[in-house]
Length: 231
Image (cartoon, rainbow, N blue to C red):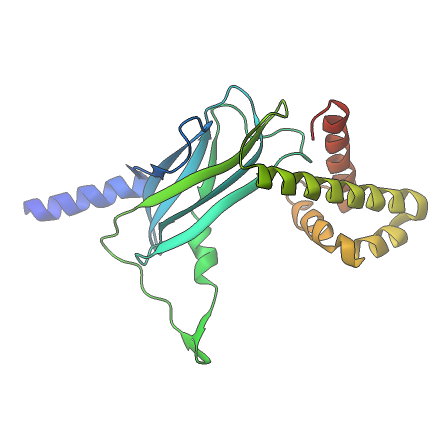
């Protein structure tokens, strides 16, 4: 067997299990988050996966990250992460890896149709000899004790969104408790509730629970944090 063939087989075997690549970190030097990349071969081609790691001694309550990564076709795809665990019982634990670009990320992107002058453009085929590149920047972090790091405007917008979502969750729970399923369904369909309602309906099956029980759980977690002075 020729050397080139052997090297090709070895490279394919390595990529099947995942080959590490360096992710450029554009964050400030005191960021509590780091990034790592893994190139892995799937049937549709090579996926450049990126994960963030919590290097803090506390859980992460909220995170805002932006960046870009090489797509299977070779161009740079913009992406990021907006995570808020205020309405959840636990955040991202110390030392935990959290996917920003996971195995199915580009499957979702590839299903989006592109049109030029009304004509659908066929997606490009994945590159065979793909080299992964990625750069990411942590813009904002809130730790479990309520302390924050990063962009104040992101923090201000997040606080405003939490206040709005808490009011909606309170309204939904109250509607159920006073009027049952009929009142609850009506409240879910109110224009101001639609965004929160959509998230509840999408998430409830994953946790194998009902929409109202998930709403109660989310509201209870937020109220507990607020009572301890975290917002």
